Amino acid sequence: MAIYRQSLRAILGLVTLSSLLTMGPLGVNAASTPEPTLPYRDASLSVDERIDDLLQRMTLEEKAGQMFHSQLNMGPNGTLDQGIPGARNSSEFMLGTQLLTHFNLVGEILDARQTAEFVNRVQQHILDTTRLGIPLTLSTDPRHAFTENIGTGFRAGRFSQWPETLGLAALRDAKLVRRFGEVARAEYRAVGIRAALHPQVDLSTEPRWARISGTFGEDAELTAEMLSAYILGLQGDRFGPDSVTTVTKHFPGGGPMENGEDSHFVYGKNQTYPGNNLEYHLIPFKAAIAVGARQMMPYYSRPIGLAGYDPVGFGFNKGIVTDLLREELGFDGIVVTDWGLITDTTILGQDMPARAWGVEHLTELQRAAMIIEAGCDQFGGETRPELIVQLVKEGTVAESRLDVSIRRLLREKFMLGLFDNPFVDAEAADAIVGRQEFVDEGAAAQRRAYTLLTNRDDVLPLGNEAAQKAKFYIEGFNATYLERRGLAVVKTPQEADYALLRLEAPFEPRPGGFESRYHAGSLEYSAAERARQAAIYAAVPTVVDMTMDRPAAVPEVAEQAAALLANFGSGPEAFLDVVLGVAGPEGKLPFDMPRSMEAVENAMEDVPFDTKDPVFKFGHGLRYKAEA
Ligand SMILES: *[C@@H]1O[C@H](CO)[C@@H](O)[C@H](O)[C@H]1NC(C)=O
Ligand SMILES: *[C@@H]1O[C@H](CO)[C@@H](O)[C@H](O)[C@H]1NC(C)=O
Ligand SMILES: *[C@@H]1O[C@H](CO)[C@@H](O)[C@H](O)[C@H]1NC(C)=O
Ligand SMILES: *[C@@H]1O[C@H](CO)[C@@H](O)[C@H](O)[C@H]1NC(C)=O
Image (cartoon, rainbow, N blue to C red; front, side, top):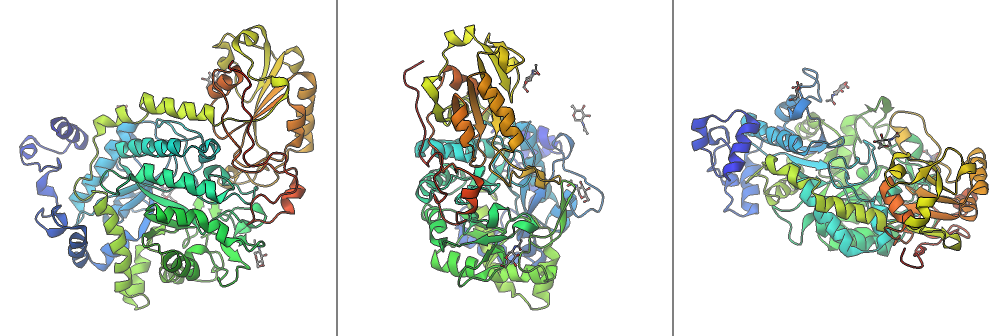
């Protein structure tokens, strides 16, 4: 505790020696905190009593602020971001004027201590400058793998690095998934992140969709089993002050995208059910609710041709959020919309219209009203509390309706213990984030999740002795990795004994700063790329390591390469360990690998395992014959 106080003092730089003596058990300068005797601050009262007390103290503006969940940027060296003075996105404006307390943290974290210090600074700022001192809840998209996309997740940085969720699914090992959740929880909590904007439990029944790598694949039962372990890992058996809360997404399953396009974008707004198979996509959500999922996020898409449901985005869709999720499935937790349903914006230099699919004609105010009417509690990626204030003042939305949502949102903060101690131990953060044990477990999972699709004449594993005598032609990583192991690299396939190719699964590059991050379109390589690869396969026995962020339609690689490995997020060292037999592949495909784009186009978006004559079936995965 003494160390904790000192670290806080060093961090905050505003605690004087005399005030150190008066600091309460939270290590907070008592003079600057709201009246500690107020019932909502009294940890001996029940959560319900504390909510009742706080709610009746809140102004309309304070309530409206709780209903927004947007991005908070860190300033230089973990300071509060000053932003452009007066700008709507400056921290001062969002925290002090708009009274927002829910934010997601974006960008790779490279300095755990600094991030923890930043979070402590924000918490102190809230205590110092707001009337009620409602603590910050910080959330994040996944940040334990390889994806780097401001719209979907961040590279691991200082955190332990694991395969994408698809790789966890490839291992079909619920205990490992639970362990992953526990490690993620420890690393998140160390820097003050208390809400995971995951798991993503959409089913990859449409193999072209750009967001498959963050799912558990195509099978509803496997997904249900994996996500249950995942949620328990993050939340713990009992939800409370040691938990990270989870947002299960994207209700009611974002997989069945029309033509496989993504509904971040205008051309991808439709979701379709030609196989009348909505029920299948609900299986994971039922499992999530059964295991105690706290929050849900509807997807951007709008259902087309789904009997009984309006063709409007799921966040606007009362039939989906209230009738189906709340009433039929019995979910009483928080519903937070996906990011940016109301306001047009710019992401990475690209104009992004509000994802108000099916209600493009409505005003911002009408959109906000419709989202509340649908049954959502919180607006993701928006900072428009003035709209809510206006809706209540003009009588469109009853304040008692807001209270229903505010109660849910406050309950989460009380249960997470944020009112009782909003601070983290910044000095401990560096020792927890990226702890060697966690890093080793992630690295082992990267190796185990490798899925061996072909292995002609048992070319793999090479074994170190054979490898030491061989010459390698490589693509997709650099010579340093081999030279460190004493292996020889040559410049052409013709000079080599083996080629090692690390390839991205096929996709069609899209324009735009933001859109280009989404791998969409054809699952086949172009004719030129196929010819380029064929020349290598003809010249030398080739081991292909394909990063499967989506399924690939690559029968020619399966036929021509000496061995084909699928990875679901792995580094070059993991690949070489698998090639050399230091580690063995244990993965099984979490989806079918289709034969062609024609087969994909002829299959139904919402139906699993229905492409004609897939090259490899769900569950395929070879093992090495003997120990290397
Ligand atoms: C951040 O910290 C570094 C190292 O202490 C210092 O050199 C730099 O000036 C600081 N930057 C800002 C903007 O405070
Ligand atoms: C705030 O918004 C402005 C204008 O859109 C933008 O240039 C700036 O980068 C934003 N600042 C942060 C911290 O996101
Ligand atoms: C979506 O579905 C509607 C209704 O069937 C159709 O008019 C529209 O062209 C489809 N595609 C997009 C991108 O809106
Ligand atoms: C190979 O890649 C690693 C990691 O990115 C880098 O540190 C190293 O300098 C690279 N080596 C060469 C020869 O480019």
